[in-house]
Image (cartoon, rainbow over all chains, first blue to last red; front, side, top):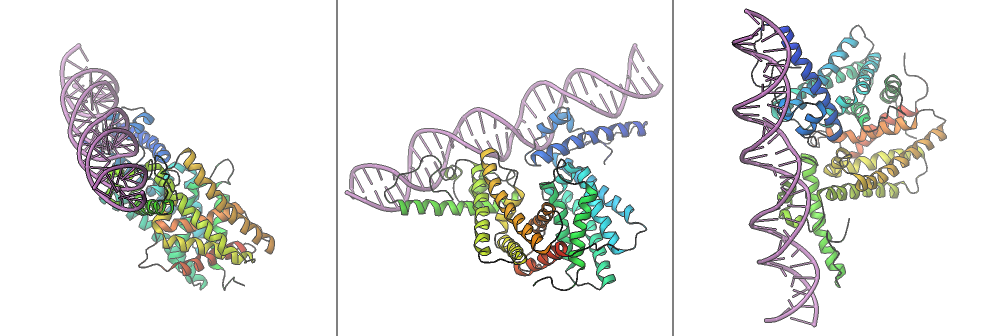
Length: 214
Length: 214
DNA sequence: CACTGATTCGAACGTTCGTTCGAATCAGTA
DNA sequence: TACTGATTCGAACGAACGTTCGAATCAGTG
Protein backbone atom coordinates (compact mmCIF):
# COMPACT_ATOMS: atom_id res chain seq x y z
CA UNK A 1 0.00 0.00 0.00
CA UNK A 2 1.17 3.53 -0.70
CA UNK A 3 1.64 6.18 1.91
CA UNK A 4 1.24 9.60 0.31
CA UNK A 5 -1.62 11.67 -1.05
CA UNK A 6 -2.18 11.44 -4.73
CA UNK A 7 -0.84 14.89 -5.48
CA UNK A 8 2.08 15.86 -3.29
CA UNK A 9 3.63 14.02 -0.32
CA UNK A 10 2.98 15.89 2.94
CA UNK A 11 6.27 16.17 4.83
CA UNK A 12 4.73 15.95 8.23
CA UNK A 13 6.72 16.01 11.43
CA UNK A 14 4.23 13.67 13.04
CA UNK A 15 5.02 11.22 10.26
CA UNK A 16 4.00 8.01 11.96
CA UNK A 17 0.56 9.31 12.95
CA UNK A 18 -0.22 11.25 9.80
CA UNK A 19 1.02 8.48 7.52
CA UNK A 20 -0.91 5.78 9.25
CA UNK A 21 -4.07 7.85 9.28
CA UNK A 22 -3.75 8.35 5.55
CA UNK A 23 -3.00 4.68 5.01
CA UNK A 24 -5.90 3.55 7.13
CA UNK A 25 -8.35 5.69 5.20
CA UNK A 26 -6.88 4.56 1.89
CA UNK A 27 -7.22 0.95 2.95
CA UNK A 28 -10.89 1.53 3.73
CA UNK A 29 -11.46 3.04 0.32
CA UNK A 30 -9.57 0.20 -1.36
CA UNK A 31 -11.69 -2.29 0.50
CA UNK A 32 -14.97 -0.71 -0.55
CA UNK A 33 -13.73 -0.27 -4.10
CA UNK A 34 -12.85 -3.96 -4.25
CA UNK A 35 -16.45 -4.87 -3.52
CA UNK A 36 -17.73 -2.49 -6.17
CA UNK A 37 -15.25 -3.65 -8.82
CA UNK A 38 -16.14 -7.23 -7.95
CA UNK A 39 -19.84 -6.62 -8.42
CA UNK A 40 -19.91 -4.32 -11.44
CA UNK A 41 -16.52 -4.94 -13.06
CA UNK A 42 -13.79 -2.34 -13.42
CA UNK A 43 -15.20 -0.65 -16.52
CA UNK A 44 -18.75 -0.96 -15.28
CA UNK A 45 -18.03 0.68 -11.95
CA UNK A 46 -18.06 4.46 -11.95
CA UNK A 47 -16.17 6.80 -9.66
CA UNK A 48 -19.58 7.85 -8.38
CA UNK A 49 -20.29 4.23 -7.43
CA UNK A 50 -17.03 4.15 -5.50
CA UNK A 51 -17.88 7.45 -3.87
CA UNK A 52 -21.24 6.14 -2.72
CA UNK A 53 -19.78 2.84 -1.45
CA UNK A 54 -17.02 4.44 0.56
CA UNK A 55 -19.11 7.30 1.88
CA UNK A 56 -16.68 9.88 0.59
CA UNK A 57 -17.35 12.60 -1.93
CA UNK A 58 -16.33 12.10 -5.53
CA UNK A 59 -13.64 14.75 -5.33
CA UNK A 60 -12.43 13.53 -1.97
CA UNK A 61 -11.39 10.20 -3.43
CA UNK A 62 -8.79 11.92 -5.59
CA UNK A 63 -6.92 12.99 -2.48
CA UNK A 64 -6.06 9.30 -2.00
CA UNK A 65 -5.26 8.16 -5.50
CA UNK A 66 -4.71 9.94 -8.76
CA UNK A 67 -6.92 7.86 -11.03
CA UNK A 68 -9.41 5.05 -11.17
CA UNK A 69 -6.80 2.93 -12.89
CA UNK A 70 -4.30 3.46 -10.09
CA UNK A 71 -6.93 2.32 -7.61
CA UNK A 72 -7.37 -0.95 -9.47
CA UNK A 73 -3.60 -1.26 -9.53
CA UNK A 74 -3.41 -0.83 -5.74
CA UNK A 75 -5.99 -3.58 -5.28
CA UNK A 76 -4.28 -6.02 -7.60
CA UNK A 77 -0.78 -5.35 -6.38
CA UNK A 78 -1.69 -5.65 -2.72
CA UNK A 79 -3.67 -8.84 -3.27
CA UNK A 80 -1.03 -10.53 -5.37
CA UNK A 81 1.87 -9.45 -3.17
CA UNK A 82 0.12 -10.80 -0.10
CA UNK A 83 -0.63 -14.17 -1.62
CA UNK A 84 2.95 -14.64 -2.86
CA UNK A 85 4.37 -13.56 0.48
CA UNK A 86 2.18 -15.99 2.41
CA UNK A 87 3.08 -18.78 0.02
CA UNK A 88 6.80 -18.24 0.50
CA UNK A 89 6.53 -18.32 4.25
CA UNK A 90 4.43 -21.49 4.13
CA UNK A 91 6.83 -23.26 1.82
CA UNK A 92 9.80 -22.68 4.11
CA UNK A 93 11.15 -25.87 5.58
CA UNK A 94 9.05 -28.15 3.38
CA UNK A 95 11.08 -30.27 0.99
CA UNK A 96 8.79 -32.90 -0.46
CA UNK A 97 7.60 -31.65 -3.87
CA UNK A 98 4.17 -33.20 -3.49
CA UNK A 99 3.65 -31.57 -0.13
CA UNK A 100 4.85 -28.29 -1.56
CA UNK A 101 2.27 -28.44 -4.33
CA UNK A 102 -0.46 -29.26 -1.84
CA UNK A 103 0.63 -26.21 0.13
CA UNK A 104 0.59 -24.11 -3.01
CA UNK A 105 -2.99 -25.14 -3.73
CA UNK A 106 -4.14 -24.73 -0.15
CA UNK A 107 -2.55 -21.29 0.13
CA UNK A 108 -4.21 -20.18 -3.08
CA UNK A 109 -7.66 -21.47 -2.16
CA UNK A 110 -7.59 -20.26 1.41
CA UNK A 111 -6.80 -16.76 0.28
CA UNK A 112 -9.34 -17.06 -2.50
CA UNK A 113 -12.21 -18.01 -0.21
CA UNK A 114 -11.19 -15.60 2.54
CA UNK A 115 -10.96 -12.69 0.08
CA UNK A 116 -13.30 -13.60 -2.75
CA UNK A 117 -13.85 -10.05 -3.97
CA UNK A 118 -10.14 -9.26 -4.15
CA UNK A 119 -9.41 -12.49 -5.95
CA UNK A 120 -12.20 -12.00 -8.42
CA UNK A 121 -10.92 -8.53 -9.21
CA UNK A 122 -7.43 -9.96 -9.60
CA UNK A 123 -8.57 -12.81 -11.84
CA UNK A 124 -11.27 -11.12 -13.84
CA UNK A 125 -9.72 -7.70 -14.40
CA UNK A 126 -6.30 -8.99 -15.35
CA UNK A 127 -6.36 -7.15 -18.68
CA UNK A 128 -7.84 -3.88 -17.45
CA UNK A 129 -4.56 -2.18 -16.54
CA UNK A 130 -2.27 -0.59 -19.10
CA UNK A 131 1.43 0.01 -19.60
CA UNK A 132 3.32 0.64 -16.35
CA UNK A 133 0.54 -0.56 -14.09
CA UNK A 134 0.03 -3.69 -16.14
CA UNK A 135 3.69 -4.62 -16.26
CA UNK A 136 4.18 -4.27 -12.53
CA UNK A 137 1.34 -6.67 -11.79
CA UNK A 138 2.49 -8.93 -14.60
CA UNK A 139 5.88 -9.19 -12.93
CA UNK A 140 4.33 -10.52 -9.73
CA UNK A 141 2.17 -12.89 -11.72
CA UNK A 142 5.23 -14.18 -13.53
CA UNK A 143 7.00 -14.80 -10.23
CA UNK A 144 4.00 -16.68 -8.89
CA UNK A 145 3.79 -18.73 -12.07
CA UNK A 146 7.52 -19.48 -11.94
CA UNK A 147 7.28 -20.75 -8.37
CA UNK A 148 4.60 -23.21 -9.43
CA UNK A 149 6.61 -24.30 -12.45
CA UNK A 150 9.58 -24.90 -10.13
CA UNK A 151 7.54 -27.07 -7.81
CA UNK A 152 6.20 -29.15 -10.67
CA UNK A 153 9.63 -29.57 -12.23
CA UNK A 154 10.90 -30.76 -8.85
CA UNK A 155 8.08 -33.26 -8.72
CA UNK A 156 8.85 -34.50 -12.21
CA UNK A 157 12.52 -34.94 -11.36
CA UNK A 158 11.87 -36.62 -8.03
CA UNK A 159 9.41 -39.15 -9.50
CA UNK A 160 10.72 -39.47 -13.01
CA UNK A 161 7.48 -38.19 -14.54
CA UNK A 162 6.83 -36.89 -18.02
CA UNK A 163 4.26 -34.23 -18.86
CA UNK A 164 4.16 -30.66 -20.10
CA UNK A 165 4.84 -28.46 -17.09
CA UNK A 166 3.29 -25.48 -18.81
CA UNK A 167 0.00 -27.20 -19.53
CA UNK A 168 -0.11 -28.71 -16.07
CA UNK A 169 0.52 -25.41 -14.30
CA UNK A 170 -1.96 -23.49 -16.41
CA UNK A 171 -4.57 -26.21 -15.99
CA UNK A 172 -4.08 -26.00 -12.25
CA UNK A 173 -4.45 -22.23 -12.29
CA UNK A 174 -7.60 -22.66 -14.32
CA UNK A 175 -9.10 -25.07 -11.81
CA UNK A 176 -8.30 -22.73 -8.96
CA UNK A 177 -9.10 -19.36 -10.46
CA UNK A 178 -12.35 -20.44 -12.06
CA UNK A 179 -13.75 -20.82 -8.56
CA UNK A 180 -14.83 -17.20 -8.54
CA UNK A 181 -17.46 -18.07 -11.12
CA UNK A 182 -19.16 -20.77 -9.10
CA UNK A 183 -18.21 -20.96 -5.44
CA UNK A 184 -21.12 -20.50 -3.08
CA UNK A 185 -20.13 -20.44 0.55
CA UNK A 186 -23.56 -21.73 1.58
CA UNK A 187 -23.31 -24.97 -0.38
CA UNK A 188 -19.63 -25.53 -1.19
CA UNK A 189 -16.93 -26.95 1.02
CA UNK A 190 -14.39 -24.84 2.85
CA UNK A 191 -10.92 -24.08 1.54
CA UNK A 192 -9.20 -27.02 3.17
CA UNK A 193 -11.53 -29.63 1.78
CA UNK A 194 -11.65 -27.95 -1.61
CA UNK A 195 -7.87 -27.84 -1.69
CA UNK A 196 -7.75 -31.53 -0.84
CA UNK A 197 -10.13 -32.46 -3.62
CA UNK A 198 -8.39 -30.36 -6.22
CA UNK A 199 -4.98 -31.50 -5.07
CA UNK A 200 -6.09 -35.11 -5.38
CA UNK A 201 -7.44 -34.64 -8.87
CA UNK A 202 -4.44 -32.67 -10.03
CA UNK A 203 -1.70 -34.73 -8.39
CA UNK A 204 -3.16 -38.09 -9.33
CA UNK A 205 -3.66 -36.76 -12.81
CA UNK A 206 -0.10 -35.69 -13.11
CA UNK A 207 1.59 -38.51 -11.17
CA UNK A 208 -0.25 -41.54 -12.43
CA UNK A 209 1.89 -43.29 -15.01
CA UNK A 210 0.79 -44.85 -18.28
CA UNK A 211 -2.33 -44.27 -20.29
CA UNK A 212 -5.68 -44.47 -18.63
CA UNK A 213 -7.35 -44.98 -21.97
CA UNK A 214 -9.03 -48.35 -22.68
CA UNK B 1 -29.45 -15.95 -34.95
CA UNK B 2 -32.41 -13.71 -35.44
CA UNK B 3 -33.96 -12.87 -38.74
CA UNK B 4 -35.76 -9.54 -38.45
CA UNK B 5 -34.76 -5.90 -38.17
CA UNK B 6 -34.56 -4.54 -34.69
CA UNK B 7 -37.72 -2.50 -34.92
CA UNK B 8 -40.39 -4.14 -37.02
CA UNK B 9 -40.29 -7.36 -39.03
CA UNK B 10 -40.43 -6.66 -42.76
CA UNK B 11 -43.07 -8.90 -44.32
CA UNK B 12 -41.30 -9.34 -47.59
CA UNK B 13 -42.59 -11.45 -50.42
CA UNK B 14 -39.05 -12.35 -51.43
CA UNK B 15 -38.63 -13.69 -47.93
CA UNK B 16 -35.80 -16.12 -48.57
CA UNK B 17 -33.65 -13.52 -50.27
CA UNK B 18 -34.43 -10.58 -48.04
CA UNK B 19 -34.14 -12.62 -44.87
CA UNK B 20 -30.86 -14.16 -45.83
CA UNK B 21 -29.43 -10.81 -46.88
CA UNK B 22 -30.38 -9.35 -43.52
CA UNK B 23 -29.01 -12.37 -41.70
CA UNK B 24 -25.76 -12.31 -43.61
CA UNK B 25 -25.15 -8.67 -42.76
CA UNK B 26 -26.09 -9.26 -39.14
CA UNK B 27 -23.68 -12.16 -38.98
CA UNK B 28 -20.88 -9.92 -40.26
CA UNK B 29 -21.63 -7.33 -37.61
CA UNK B 30 -21.79 -9.98 -34.92
CA UNK B 31 -18.45 -11.30 -36.06
CA UNK B 32 -16.76 -7.92 -35.94
CA UNK B 33 -18.40 -7.10 -32.62
CA UNK B 34 -17.08 -10.36 -31.17
CA UNK B 35 -13.53 -9.27 -31.92
CA UNK B 36 -14.09 -5.87 -30.35
CA UNK B 37 -15.77 -7.28 -27.23
CA UNK B 38 -12.94 -9.79 -26.96
CA UNK B 39 -10.29 -7.10 -27.10
CA UNK B 40 -11.85 -4.32 -25.01
CA UNK B 41 -14.45 -6.15 -22.96
CA UNK B 42 -18.20 -5.60 -23.19
CA UNK B 43 -18.32 -2.51 -20.99
CA UNK B 44 -15.09 -1.15 -22.42
CA UNK B 45 -16.25 -1.40 -26.03
CA UNK B 46 -18.34 1.50 -27.27
CA UNK B 47 -20.94 1.45 -29.99
CA UNK B 48 -18.58 3.74 -31.88
CA UNK B 49 -15.88 1.07 -31.65
CA UNK B 50 -18.32 -1.44 -33.09
CA UNK B 51 -19.29 1.00 -35.82
CA UNK B 52 -15.66 1.51 -36.81
CA UNK B 53 -14.87 -2.22 -36.75
CA UNK B 54 -17.83 -3.22 -38.87
CA UNK B 55 -17.57 -0.30 -41.29
CA UNK B 56 -21.17 0.72 -40.67
CA UNK B 57 -22.41 3.97 -39.28
CA UNK B 58 -23.36 4.20 -35.63
CA UNK B 59 -27.02 4.65 -36.43
CA UNK B 60 -26.95 1.93 -39.05
CA UNK B 61 -26.10 -0.69 -36.48
CA UNK B 62 -29.43 -0.14 -34.77
CA UNK B 63 -31.22 -1.40 -37.82
CA UNK B 64 -29.84 -4.85 -37.00
CA UNK B 65 -30.21 -5.01 -33.23
CA UNK B 66 -32.01 -2.88 -30.71
CA UNK B 67 -29.28 -2.48 -28.11
CA UNK B 68 -25.67 -3.18 -27.31
CA UNK B 69 -26.83 -5.70 -24.73
CA UNK B 70 -28.86 -7.61 -27.28
CA UNK B 71 -25.79 -7.81 -29.51
CA UNK B 72 -23.81 -9.45 -26.71
CA UNK B 73 -26.75 -11.76 -26.17
CA UNK B 74 -26.73 -12.78 -29.83
CA UNK B 75 -23.03 -13.58 -29.63
CA UNK B 76 -23.32 -15.63 -26.47
CA UNK B 77 -26.44 -17.48 -27.46
CA UNK B 78 -25.13 -18.40 -30.91
CA UNK B 79 -21.77 -19.54 -29.53
CA UNK B 80 -23.23 -21.61 -26.74
CA UNK B 81 -25.97 -23.13 -28.85
CA UNK B 82 -23.46 -24.19 -31.46
CA UNK B 83 -21.10 -25.83 -29.00
CA UNK B 84 -23.92 -27.78 -27.32
CA UNK B 85 -25.32 -28.85 -30.65
CA UNK B 86 -21.96 -30.12 -31.87
CA UNK B 87 -21.39 -31.94 -28.63
CA UNK B 88 -24.70 -33.78 -28.86
CA UNK B 89 -24.03 -34.91 -32.39
CA UNK B 90 -20.54 -36.12 -31.46
CA UNK B 91 -21.75 -38.05 -28.44
CA UNK B 92 -24.27 -40.02 -30.47
CA UNK B 93 -23.43 -43.68 -30.66
CA UNK B 94 -20.67 -43.52 -28.07
CA UNK B 95 -21.38 -45.47 -24.91
CA UNK B 96 -18.16 -45.71 -22.93
CA UNK B 97 -18.25 -42.97 -20.28
CA UNK B 98 -14.52 -42.33 -20.48
CA UNK B 99 -14.66 -41.92 -24.23
CA UNK B 100 -17.65 -39.63 -23.83
CA UNK B 101 -15.74 -37.39 -21.46
CA UNK B 102 -12.77 -37.30 -23.81
CA UNK B 103 -15.17 -36.25 -26.55
CA UNK B 104 -16.66 -33.60 -24.30
CA UNK B 105 -13.23 -32.12 -23.67
CA UNK B 106 -12.13 -32.35 -27.27
CA UNK B 107 -15.33 -30.73 -28.50
CA UNK B 108 -14.93 -27.89 -26.04
CA UNK B 109 -11.29 -27.24 -26.83
CA UNK B 110 -11.66 -27.54 -30.57
CA UNK B 111 -14.38 -24.95 -30.59
CA UNK B 112 -12.41 -22.86 -28.14
CA UNK B 113 -9.29 -22.71 -30.27
CA UNK B 114 -11.20 -22.36 -33.54
CA UNK B 115 -13.28 -19.46 -32.17
CA UNK B 116 -11.14 -17.92 -29.45
CA UNK B 117 -12.81 -14.51 -29.53
CA UNK B 118 -16.32 -15.94 -29.25
CA UNK B 119 -15.31 -18.21 -26.42
CA UNK B 120 -13.55 -15.46 -24.55
CA UNK B 121 -16.64 -13.29 -24.81
CA UNK B 122 -18.74 -16.20 -23.62
CA UNK B 123 -16.45 -16.98 -20.69
CA UNK B 124 -15.38 -13.53 -19.66
CA UNK B 125 -18.64 -11.63 -20.10
CA UNK B 126 -20.82 -14.21 -18.42
CA UNK B 127 -22.16 -11.68 -15.92
CA UNK B 128 -22.64 -8.77 -18.31
CA UNK B 129 -26.18 -9.62 -19.38
CA UNK B 130 -29.23 -8.84 -17.27
CA UNK B 131 -32.66 -10.30 -16.61
CA UNK B 132 -34.20 -11.96 -19.65
CA UNK B 133 -31.04 -12.05 -21.69
CA UNK B 134 -29.06 -13.47 -18.77
CA UNK B 135 -31.54 -16.19 -17.96
CA UNK B 136 -31.77 -17.43 -21.53
CA UNK B 137 -28.00 -17.90 -21.74
CA UNK B 138 -27.97 -19.33 -18.23
CA UNK B 139 -30.44 -21.98 -19.35
CA UNK B 140 -28.08 -23.18 -22.08
CA UNK B 141 -25.18 -23.11 -19.66
CA UNK B 142 -27.15 -25.23 -17.22
CA UNK B 143 -27.94 -27.75 -19.92
CA UNK B 144 -24.26 -27.94 -20.87
CA UNK B 145 -23.28 -28.33 -17.24
CA UNK B 146 -25.91 -31.03 -16.71
CA UNK B 147 -24.61 -33.03 -19.66
CA UNK B 148 -21.14 -33.05 -18.16
CA UNK B 149 -22.49 -34.03 -14.74
CA UNK B 150 -24.35 -36.89 -16.39
CA UNK B 151 -21.21 -38.18 -18.09
CA UNK B 152 -19.23 -38.05 -14.86
CA UNK B 153 -21.96 -39.77 -12.91
CA UNK B 154 -21.98 -42.51 -15.54
CA UNK B 155 -18.24 -42.86 -15.13
CA UNK B 156 -18.54 -43.08 -11.37
CA UNK B 157 -21.19 -45.75 -11.63
CA UNK B 158 -19.37 -47.76 -14.27
CA UNK B 159 -16.10 -47.81 -12.35
CA UNK B 160 -17.32 -47.64 -8.78
CA UNK B 161 -15.57 -44.35 -8.11
CA UNK B 162 -16.13 -41.86 -5.35
CA UNK B 163 -15.63 -38.12 -5.72
CA UNK B 164 -17.68 -34.96 -5.73
CA UNK B 165 -19.17 -34.65 -9.20
CA UNK B 166 -19.77 -30.94 -8.73
CA UNK B 167 -16.16 -30.17 -7.83
CA UNK B 168 -14.86 -32.39 -10.60
CA UNK B 169 -17.06 -30.83 -13.29
CA UNK B 170 -16.32 -27.28 -12.21
CA UNK B 171 -12.61 -28.01 -11.98
CA UNK B 172 -12.73 -29.37 -15.49
CA UNK B 173 -14.57 -26.28 -16.73
CA UNK B 174 -11.93 -24.17 -15.03
CA UNK B 175 -9.09 -26.00 -16.75
CA UNK B 176 -10.77 -25.61 -20.11
CA UNK B 177 -12.16 -22.09 -19.89
CA UNK B 178 -9.07 -20.57 -18.37
CA UNK B 179 -7.33 -21.23 -21.68
CA UNK B 180 -8.48 -17.89 -23.01
CA UNK B 181 -6.11 -16.20 -20.56
CA UNK B 182 -2.98 -17.98 -21.76
CA UNK B 183 -3.27 -19.85 -25.03
CA UNK B 184 -0.87 -18.64 -27.69
CA UNK B 185 -1.33 -20.34 -31.01
CA UNK B 186 2.32 -19.74 -31.91
CA UNK B 187 3.72 -21.70 -28.98
CA UNK B 188 0.93 -23.92 -27.67
CA UNK B 189 -0.26 -27.24 -28.97
CA UNK B 190 -3.35 -27.67 -31.12
CA UNK B 191 -6.75 -28.61 -29.78
CA UNK B 192 -6.34 -32.34 -30.18
CA UNK B 193 -3.10 -32.55 -28.24
CA UNK B 194 -4.31 -30.09 -25.62
CA UNK B 195 -7.47 -32.11 -25.20
CA UNK B 196 -5.41 -35.27 -24.77
CA UNK B 197 -3.23 -33.71 -22.10
CA UNK B 198 -6.11 -32.23 -20.18
CA UNK B 199 -8.15 -35.40 -20.52
CA UNK B 200 -5.24 -37.41 -19.15
CA UNK B 201 -4.77 -35.15 -16.16
CA UNK B 202 -8.44 -34.97 -15.42
CA UNK B 203 -9.36 -38.61 -15.99
CA UNK B 204 -6.38 -40.04 -14.16
CA UNK B 205 -7.07 -37.59 -11.38
CA UNK B 206 -10.63 -38.67 -11.07
CA UNK B 207 -10.23 -42.39 -11.80
CA UNK B 208 -7.14 -43.25 -9.81
CA UNK B 209 -8.19 -44.94 -6.60
CA UNK B 210 -6.74 -44.43 -3.15
CA UNK B 211 -4.74 -41.60 -1.76
CA UNK B 212 -1.69 -40.43 -3.65
CA UNK B 213 -0.38 -38.77 -0.54
CA UNK B 214 2.79 -40.18 1.07
C1' DC C 1 -39.38 4.80 -66.03
C1' DA C 2 -41.87 5.28 -61.37
C1' DC C 3 -42.73 3.24 -57.12
C1' DT C 4 -41.91 0.79 -52.56
C1' DG C 5 -39.88 -1.09 -48.89
C1' DA C 6 -35.11 -2.21 -47.23
C1' DT C 7 -31.07 -0.16 -45.78
C1' DT C 8 -27.84 3.50 -44.38
C1' DC C 9 -26.41 7.70 -42.40
C1' DG C 10 -25.38 12.66 -40.34
C1' DA C 11 -26.67 15.03 -36.66
C1' DA C 12 -28.25 15.48 -32.54
C1' DC C 13 -30.56 13.99 -27.94
C1' DG C 14 -29.95 13.77 -22.81
C1' DT C 15 -27.01 11.34 -19.59
C1' DT C 16 -23.05 9.83 -17.46
C1' DC C 17 -18.18 9.50 -17.47
C1' DG C 18 -13.31 10.57 -15.09
C1' DT C 19 -11.17 14.37 -13.46
C1' DT C 20 -10.18 19.20 -11.63
C1' DC C 21 -10.39 23.37 -8.82
C1' DG C 22 -10.92 26.56 -5.20
C1' DA C 23 -13.03 27.11 -1.11
C1' DA C 24 -14.34 25.19 3.28
C1' DT C 25 -13.43 22.40 7.28
C1' DC C 26 -10.72 19.63 10.29
C1' DA C 27 -6.79 18.24 13.58
C1' DG C 28 -2.75 19.24 15.79
C1' DT C 29 0.66 22.25 17.50
C1' DA C 30 2.54 26.64 19.45
C1' DT D 1 -6.01 31.68 20.84
C1' DA D 2 -4.09 31.88 16.20
C1' DC D 3 -1.87 29.38 12.79
C1' DT D 4 -0.72 25.51 9.37
C1' DG D 5 -0.99 21.71 6.78
C1' DA D 6 -4.17 17.65 6.16
C1' DT D 7 -8.50 16.48 4.58
C1' DT D 8 -13.09 17.00 2.42
C1' DC D 9 -16.47 18.69 -0.71
C1' DG D 10 -19.87 21.20 -4.15
C1' DA D 11 -19.76 22.48 -8.54
C1' DA D 12 -18.29 22.31 -12.74
C1' DC D 13 -15.28 20.81 -16.95
C1' DG D 14 -15.09 18.69 -21.67
C1' DA D 15 -15.43 14.21 -23.53
C1' DA D 16 -17.65 10.13 -24.44
C1' DC D 17 -21.60 7.27 -23.79
C1' DG D 18 -26.00 4.55 -25.82
C1' DT D 19 -29.71 5.66 -28.43
C1' DT D 20 -33.07 8.15 -31.66
C1' DC D 21 -34.88 10.49 -35.72
C1' DG D 22 -35.85 12.06 -40.22
C1' DA D 23 -33.93 12.27 -44.43
C1' DA D 24 -31.23 10.16 -48.02
C1' DT D 25 -29.97 6.20 -50.73
C1' DC D 26 -30.29 1.61 -52.38
C1' DA D 27 -32.34 -2.69 -54.71
C1' DG D 28 -35.90 -4.94 -56.71
C1' DT D 29 -40.38 -5.11 -58.96
C1' DG D 30 -44.35 -3.23 -61.94
